Image 1: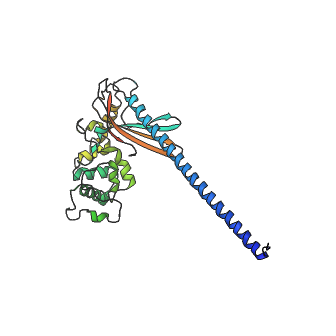
Image 2 (image 1 turned 30 degrees about the vertical axis):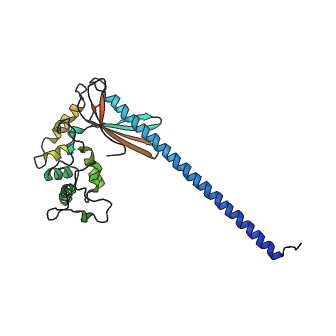
Length: 283
């Protein structure tokens, strides 16, 4: 039998090393894939845990409101309440939907007043009012100076050419910014039910300013005071009054938010029903 030459030994050793390296690379690839899948599974489980906690928060709020007036009933003035569910921190607040300006039904003057009340000034307020109007036009046939789809070229959104479907859509207006949006988001609504018109005595100053439009703004402070008095009245009936429940669930750096509009019926068979649910709007 021929003995392998010294040079052949080197090639054999190199092949063995390369084989081991390739095998190790495959093992590491498999482990990395498994680790990624494990992390993804854990993230999914944490998300499900937060969503379940937020669901529980909605039920806690419904229980706190109840369909009957009485001492200890939760108020509907937007006060943030703290709760804990399975180690998840819950922040819950109740808002009166009839005290909000109906987004989509505001005229130009009311839209301008809304943006000014939320902190927009001068040209920005005028631009936002124009964009608000043009966003809902049936097509791009706008007046001179109006905003069309071409003005949104390169952006991931364009005018809907219809009514606003969510409050968050306001963030798509070209001259909108986060501070203005956050100041007005809780004062407007896209909910249009059969439960009655705008309720001035339940309005926030921003909503009241929007509904007043070009009218004098005196009396808004009194409206706000009347609202606080009304919302803290534990004897007032909530039957037939649409209320938004907003729940923010937090665990470490993870967060989930849910909101729903509920209406109490006064019927023992079905004490309340959900008029609208947004599993993930966080206004």
